[in-house]
Length: 107
Length: 110
Image (tube, rainbow over all chains, first blue to last red; front, side, top):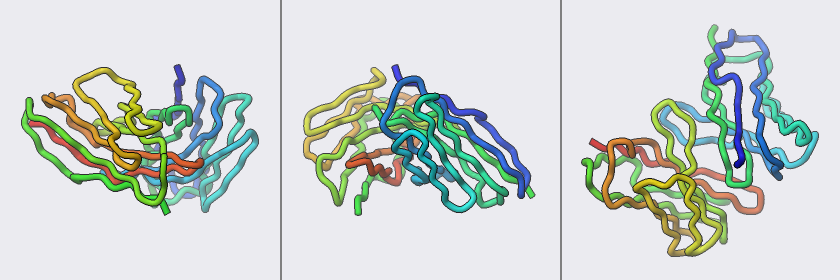
């Protein structure tokens, strides 16, 4: 059974600080996805990581994938309030999601 | 571009009433389709997925069912709703490595 674990589940950051969200999964997978969800809204796709060593960056967010370690990271650089949201990773197979990381960026 | 439509956007139903939520896909053919439920403040629970017409796999045995009568149509149903069925229902699709979500249906069972 494929399991996806994210940590931390809650993250309170100060603006301008850096932090990393981790996503571990239990079996091999072709693709890993990162999503953002604002309260009451659907999911917004952030990144699709397709191979070992893949790194993608968009603004203050950077995602990477290590398929050997079955680990993906979402790194936040110089956080701003607008990044406050819940972030999910998901692994294809049956598109199984982690529990999400609720990020709160405070001034 | 690919788009997923869901309706209704919100729904309030009494316990014991039936349910039908519809998801339709635009802009692609033969996608893998998924139904998720998200309880308030929680993660996404995979309910059903489908790799083609008439092919449904259930991840969580409960009072819900799903059907895929057409390639681009995915329906979530229940004969009798429970209070615990309240939540945010999301339809998702994957095709050719691209994935996308519908806007969701917020269901409140009273």
